[in-house]
Image 1: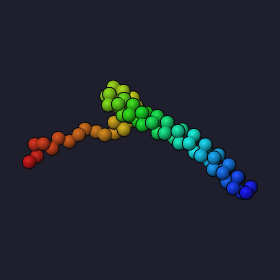
Image 2: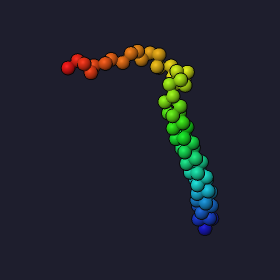
Image 3: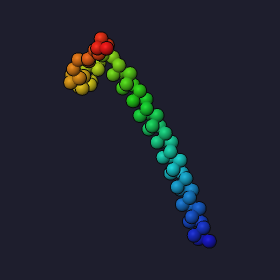
Length: 69
């Protein structure tokens, strides 16, 4: 009888904890996705991208192969 009560109490505590964590994780994923979208939008602006992304300096000049064939 005591074990059943302890098991029920543990289950209630676990469900309370897990529902709180689930809500937190959902919010964290939404914030992360919003941040990712915001960063991608910011990187589409060439003037800002020059300050943020250092890889653009190392890319060089694109080859134009349209007249080869």
